[in-house]
Image (cartoon, rainbow over all chains, first blue to last red; front, side, top):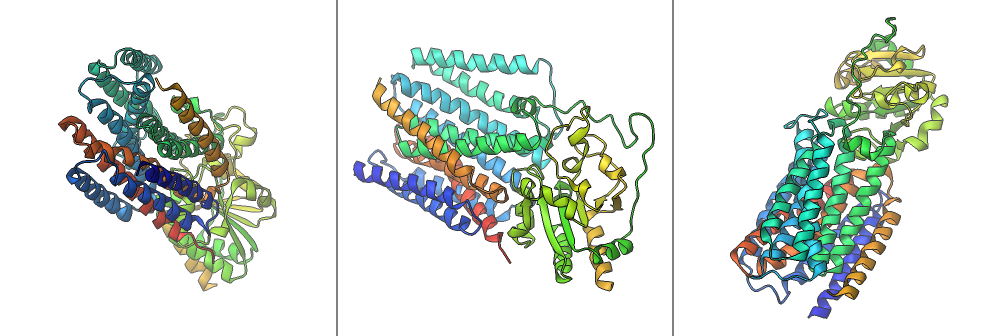
Length: 460
Length: 94
């Protein structure tokens, strides 16, 4: 029986790998997710036959309760709320890994573990608990329960370093004498606290990085649990997720041209003093356009690129934008979407929102695939995006966003920026794009403004 | 301590990380959100450990820990796969 279960675990591991491989294209992605879930199903079923399991009543309760809660969450969540959902799921995964390790520790009367087992128990508890509370704070920030601002507290870094060293010291002592269960409880408590303290300083707009990093942690915690219960499938599955989270974290950091340390320590908090007025006191002027003129402008265009940002999601404007894109296409105009890597509140968030609005995925272009096309574009429509289209990132060394890769929308013949007002973006810095000669401001709530524009174009 | 066993585990861990890097760098940015929720569901694999701890009936404490772990892991697995499928269904090409 043991042999059979090991073979099934191998099959499950292969299904996870194939599942992720098939996520490489939107055509096969759904099938990939199915294969991955099939692997999980097989793993669970074969585990139920494990000879170590003698009672099923708690298992049935746990599986039913978890399935109900998970299904309701998955079916109810709005696509705009996806970052919170993923944040919360990360937390549950990390929490589960920590609890399994604790359960392994407490199931014996006199703890007398092999050195490698006790070390991985401590690591699993540490990483799992940090992931748990860290994810809850991230969820709270995204949901608006916890402040989305950069939170600074006195001696922030020394405190975190001391807490971390304390966990390590306790870990070493447990390794020497595994019977010291009070030390393990100390590791639990301090790890839970560390999770809170590590995520609290991170600003709401930096959440894509935090969520990616916590995603990675939840995988590594699962791997550590695999070391504890000596199961290679857990080690493999956890390592895949750990790698995935790290890659996404790196992509997000590159998208903001910031180091991971800078994000984790809560950067950018000093910006925010600069308002619409320039630092030298000269009031810059911008030009605005109304929906009627804008409709005529669009009517004469042949190449249009739409740049959506998080503001589009906040205003729920994605369906109106889809209508606009369809209308323009029916007039023979080439319409594409340019998506900055850090648009939205998690990696790929904007793509999901547009997919939900039934925008064809082949119209969505990543920064590197479309950035050279802006000079040949008649109109760029910027909706709810700000810092990711600020040309200052290319040349202004004093700007906090200097060096960040941006969409070169200012190279287009005409740039239309839809915003509610001239307020600054999340980095708290003024955007020189708004004052360029080829930029026209189109003020209004994104959803109303785009709907109005669609009606005007229809009347032409 | 079973040093050889540990080294074998580390082998598997390191190689799997390399496989992960290779696979995930090929996922296009447009699918990064489903990638995250889908891989998140995979990290719920810890459900296997939770099942055993919850079902071993060793003592009350470890059974309770196992039960809570099982609920958490099941939420992670079921919620993760379902929401990923919900998203991927929406990705269509006209």
